[in-house]
Length: 226
Image 1 (cartoon, rainbow, N blue to C red):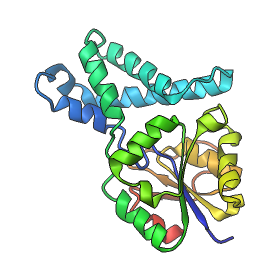
Image 2: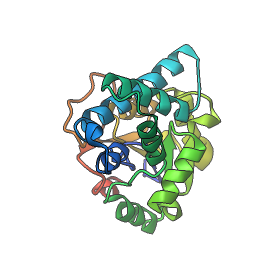
Image 3: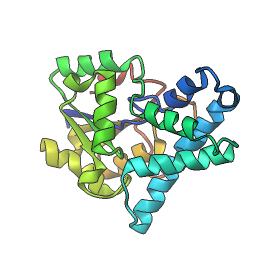
Image 4: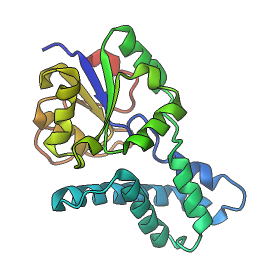
C-alpha cells in the first residue's frame, strides 16, 4: 500500500530530550550539573519512560508532565542534586522549549512538498507538545499533533495508534511511523504500520516481535521511505 501519512513520535525523535540538561549545565554556577548532566539526562529519560509504562499497565494514568517531573526528581536524587530547587525548576522550564534536531525542518518540508500528511503521535500532553512545536517553529509543517490524553493511556497501548486512522481515515498500511524508541517502533509495527527506528545512539535492536522495518541514525532520509 502507498504511504499517505508520516507520523512521528516527539520526544527523542523530533525533539532532543538531552537539550534541557545540556543547556542548564552550561549556565554559570551549575558546576555540579556540568559534571553529571549526561548521566542525569539519560536517567531522567529512562524513568520518564518507565513510569509511563507502569502507569499504562496498572491503569494509573496521569499526564506526561507529571511523569516528566517524577522522572526528574528520581534522577536528581540519584545524582545527589535533589536539594537544589532552583536547578529543578530550571530543568523543567527548559523542557518546554527543547531543540528540534537540525535535520527536522527540511525533512518535514520535503514531506509536505510531496503532499503527504504529517503528524506527531506522542505521550506528551497537549500543552507540552504545543510549546515544543511552537519553540521549534515546525507547526506549519504538521497536519496534526496527537496526544495520548485523548485516549487516557500511554504507548504502546493500541488505542494510541488507533488515533492515526481516526484522524486521517488511513489504513495502517498507509502509515509510516517513525520513532527513536525501539519498543515504540516494534509496537507500531505489530499494529500494522510501516516503521523506521531512528537509532541515534547505535543501540542493539530490542528483542521484541515486529522489529523495525528500517533503521537509521537520523531523520534525513525519511522522505526516501514515504
